[in-house]
Image (cartoon, rainbow, N blue to C red; front, side, top):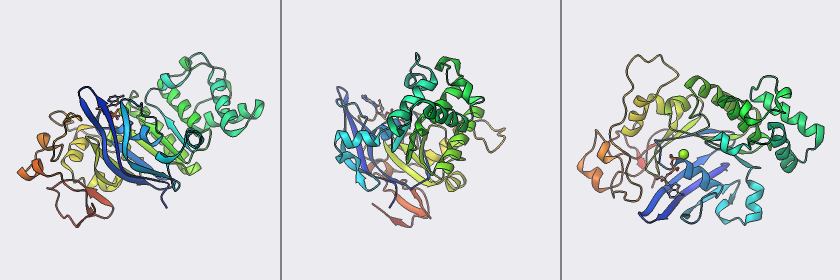
Length: 328
Ligand SMILES: Nc1ncnc2c1ncn2[C@@H]1O[C@H](COP(=O)(O)OP(=O)(O)O)[C@@H](O)[C@H]1O
Ligand SMILES: [Mg+2]
């Protein structure tokens, strides 16, 4: 049984402009200890996907309108508030996009960490402080023991992000959701943070969902990658396969438009032309149609089914070759 199984999840926002279909039928699994990358341009529904897992969607205007989120055999969408609280920040932890908004600026790092350790792990006094220092050390904060009495503003952006990860790991979660943990940081520091996360994931056996718009950076640290476009997963494969053999024209565009770590690129980065669609007015056919270089008439009329085209490699595109069988 996979650790997490998301089935046909739909999360909509009911606004004056119409129904914004932020997540519109995504399905995927996360195995124990696995690192999944969730990649796509800004506004494609990545954060809403992650927040849905913890049922943190503001309602109204948002609502999870259908689907199942099976975590360790139970549907999170069916739990009562008490059961949900036990899972949040405990079995599933989240690192948010903005570390400064999730850290309390008037409390020391040590205080914030020991609070979490008391609440979730029942540790007090010296043992909580020792554990906090140990966690900071694990995420690579130099002289961790001496930094416990510092305040968030005394840490650099990269170091704050490490603190956030240490706090998230303090309850030894089964699943860590990291929502663009590195976006504001330069590429080298992004790589260091991802390195820390993948090491922790290996050591603790924690599964991780890393959300980012940078496919070039995540592919090296993820086991598998889901590429999202307009609220749907349009391609999924192992990171290696996706990197070497991308099949969706959008994935190809993403790979050409982001800085990569694995090569010294001399060639220019090519942005994907055009804009993502308005999620309140999605077309019936493929949402990528207006921007697509491979488009055919059929693509405008019929949404391409998610099809298996190679081992564990699925793609939602009429024009990708070697389609073996349909799954939906
Ligand atoms: N509280 C909200 N009210 C209305 N629309 C929202 C709300 N939160 C997110 N959305 C919409 O959902 C879509 C997906 O957003 P999000 O998941 O944050 O994208 P990203 O991939 O950049 O993380 C966007 O169109 C966004 O405008
Ligand atoms: Mg986001």
